[in-house]
Image: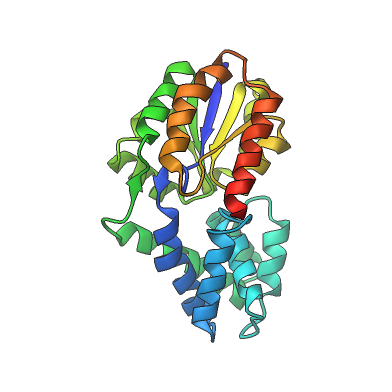
Length: 266
């Protein structure tokens, strides 16, 4: 394993994909699969939870429970789904399918059907996804200085397809997506394999990315919502070599963390 590791989130960080996915697929299909009565309010709440607040980028199944709870949902009982979300070690379709094998309740089955429908909708969609300006150049710079991993809670097939079509895949060494566990656990695995936490930078756009970094004592750099190109340019010009040279400090981390929260709160 290389001495320097760069962990890069996909949706909303390298790929401009979050907004359309939640507007066209995640929210509307959740309302459909769970027969939500007030779909307009549900979609408004869904976007606030998943795009425009401190819960931006939350795992899809966590976001599903939060969205349903936001409208006092009572069409079906979601206790088993809520319990699984809170207790599972892997918030993934495979883990959910295994839970259904043990206890095939309606809420669990609907959640899996929703997730699969979202994946299919994203796969079938054309012309919506683009890479953020500056992402390719930023990834190339990181690749020059160390090992680059995609660390994402998104579906692996979708990430691999998007990164291949937009010329990003050649700038990374491996993909760690939903199928390989939570972001914090992925980074913990790198450390268990011998990586120095201070030689790892997590690049992302959501609180989950920051949490994954801080849970493991590693560094965080934000791709700011609405300022993605500027974020990538600054990463390439002022941050990558600083991390590679061991010059990135706690003061730097705290500075970017403050900018991150200010951006989400405004």
